[in-house]
Every structure is written in structure tokens, then in C-alpha cells.
Length: 299
Image (cartoon, rainbow, N blue to C red; front, top):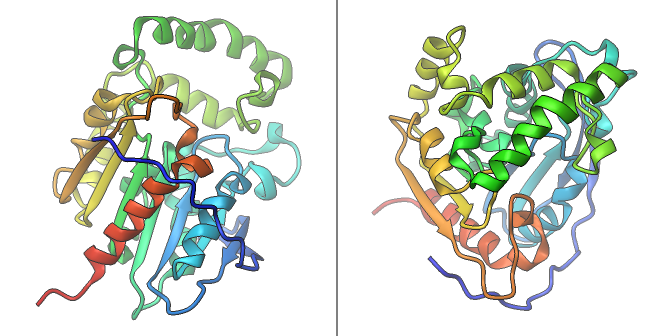
């Protein structure tokens, strides 16, 4: 599917409000709320990619708020405004990020009379099946969410990732005591538990669905998700190409799920991180239009 890009600028009219969220296990998360401009069309929770701080999603949040959506961005524990003290002493896992952190954001934005949507980027889309309160959502949409196995990637990218997991990152973790992602210019530093989960699951074709210690519980949890969901990925996403997305998202067995393959224009590069850059505004517009459609009363 090819979508024509426009040069429409993002209007910066929303005044962001810094707030704090407290998770069910008592962790304080830094978050930002972008109030809707005009008539409220819905509430949106933005669930970030691994190692990406919430500021990266500011342009999208401003745009969506200008279109009538209240938007919440936040940092997972150990990241950005949710980092308290040294990462060496922080005990956390990916499952904690979903079960507690994303869940707290969903609770914070839930209103009985307002549609609630989850927008996930990479791990943020995986988290849909990890949160215990997905029943509060009206619908979900993700960009670049899939299984991290190298076999779904191109041979060149798979070799790079293999070297990263087996040579570069083990040395960094041994040196620093946590995953010093920032030393590679690839994102925020990550707690050791996140590193261990990520490395282990990326050895499996179906990610944590193949983890013998988690498989049964994880598959059961994902089977409980019933909200409408669209999983989009760009054909030039080296880490999560469409077949990686398909391998992961097929486990949402009871969700009305749609797949969108984004084809970049001739002079455009999206990759894994470009979905939330301003040049992808047309894809944001398409997503918000779908949110309006899926939440409209059916005659």
C-alpha cells in the first residue's frame, strides 16, 4: 500500500502538562499529557519502543491533540523521566513494563464516556497482550511491532544483530553493569533485566511465545485480547519487516486484526524509527481516521 505524503506542518497549539503516574506496584513514572483541542474525539496512550524516551513522540502527540485527542506519553521505569537512581540497582523486566507501566497509563486515560486507544511503537505494540486492562481499550494501532528474531531480517541485518547480541552488548553490559545503549547512539540505557529478556527472546522465531518458561501463559494472555487492532510496518524496516510482524501478531488470535504494509516513497526512508517523524504525518492521519471510524456508533 502506497500513501502519498503531504507537506502539511504540525500545529503546535497544545500546552503539554507534566504529570506523574503511580503503577500498581508503587513505581513513579514520568508522563506528559497533551490536552485535546476542541471537541474531544478520544484519548490516546502512546506506548514507546524499547530505549526511546517519551519526547520522541512529542510531534505526534501535538498533532493528535490538535485533531481532538487527549494524548498521554510516558517513560517506562528506568527510562528518561522514570529513571530514579542507578540502573545497576533497578530490578525490572519487559513483563513489568507491560503489566505495570503501560497498564498504569491506560488506567490514567480511561474514561467511561470517551473512546480509549493504544498507539504502540515496537515494544509498545507487543505490550497490548501483556497488559491486564486491555478490555478498557476501544482499539489499538502499532508501528514496527513484531518478533526480533534475526531470521526474519535480511542476511546483512541479521549478521549485524548477531554481532550486537554476541559481541558488542555483552562487553558493554560487563563494563557498565547495565545495557549501555546510549554508548552506541541507539537509545536510552536499559536495565539489566530488559537486556536479558531481549537477548533471550530474540533467539526464538516467535519471540517470547517460544520461551519454554513463559509460552503457555503468554499465549493465553494474548488470546484474551479482543479489541480491533491494526499492525503497520514499513517495507524498509530492517528490524521488523512485515514477515516479522506477521509472525508475532498472529498470536492475537481473537482480535479483529488488520495488517498494513507501508511502502516509503522514492526519496523517503522510514526504517524502524521513522514512523513518528513529521514526514510520516499522513500515516498518523490515517490512523486517527481509523480511530474515529472504529469508535463511531454503528447504525
